[in-house]
Length: 116
Length: 113
Image (cartoon, rainbow over all chains, first blue to last red; front, side):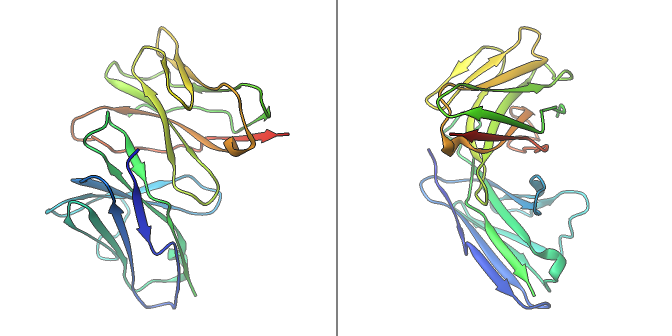
């Protein structure tokens, strides 16, 4: 199946700093990628839909100025957590749709963010 | 997208079949049933999906009732590596919600020796 990578796999940052997480589709081009957040013992929550060459669509309650998404190419989307705070500590997961497949959405391995 | 109901947790003996049920009584005619699983601290993994016919692949089988109000994911010979949270998701294929997945709480499947 299609492969999606994320970098870094984990990151620790200080409160008030910004952190960038990359999501790459390795063997296919993805016009649409998705960003999810998962808190401990909870399910995945969709944060935003990232479309190549256009602005991201954010879910209700997600601050677009805090979670900046850029989808500059067909294989790369980035999520920047700006002015991170401890409550932003979470597991961030991206996914991408492989247009060659029958509606399959492939997920990255996730990035564990800890804000101290 | 239609809401799904799954048991919170299930146990299964290694080597036996694991049957995971899912209720989706409000499913619409153009909505597919998808199954994903998430092993601890990893991203979700696609397992299988179907519209109304039963489906089988190398990982699992999906049995959808004739009225499409419920389905069962079958792992024919569960192994310890199948221990994970299994998510049943109902979603429209195509249109403006194309690709968008809404995760519920899922079923925690524990496979024991």
